[in-house]
Amino acid sequence: MKKLFALTLAVVLCLSLSVTAFAGTLGEITSMHDTVYPEGESGKITTVVIGKTDSEGMLALPKYKDAELLSAVAAKGTLIEAPKSAETGATKYLLAQFAEKETEVELTLTWVQEETYKLGKAKMKDTAPGDFKAAAYSMTNTAPVKIGNYKLDMAVPQGYEMANIVDYDPEEDYSIYQNKGVKFGHHTFGELAAGGKAKFAINIKKNVGASVLVIWAVCILISAFFLYKNRDMLRQAKELDMQKKAKREA
Image (cartoon, rainbow, N blue to C red; front, side, top):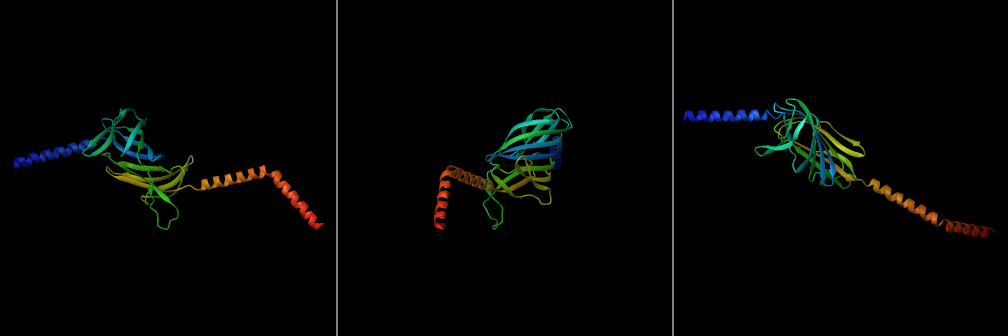
């Protein structure tokens, strides 16, 4: 019995050491920044990753749910091949291999994710006027390494205006800004552990201001066109009115 217990303990220790060694050979993610744009109900996600490869030139990356990886381009370091799927148990992630070992690298990934901009009900107070909708985004760090600093920028769909940002930690940095005519909500989540989840949502409303201005402009143009086309008739009516007024005064 003692021999069996010793053997079992040895096996458990070996497995623990192998898992620890495996987890320690997948590099480090220093920072990761997602920028999300609408493409219909889908979302186009640009992910910029700065990290450090392990002794084999490997770097583990999160694999996004319901998303297709379109491209992977190294801005720093030499990417040997496109990131490949890997898994530990039920957790799936990506592995990128670089020529450089134990070196800082930078990688830009481009994804298309389904239903990122499928609008839902806004998280607003009952007293809030107007028909508000919400666009929500979440990212789970499926990589078996932590993300040192995770940031997110989410664009407002065309034809909508930003109301506010929800589902964020108010102790962290957030902001609303505009770039090339597109409004974004930004949030810095900070460190994200392996298996950690970042949630973010923006409340939006149909931009009726532009529509109202267009309607008013069309009305003004129609009125101006009507006055121009009927200028002779209006002049004659005015002259006739003046003649009648002169006769009454006489």
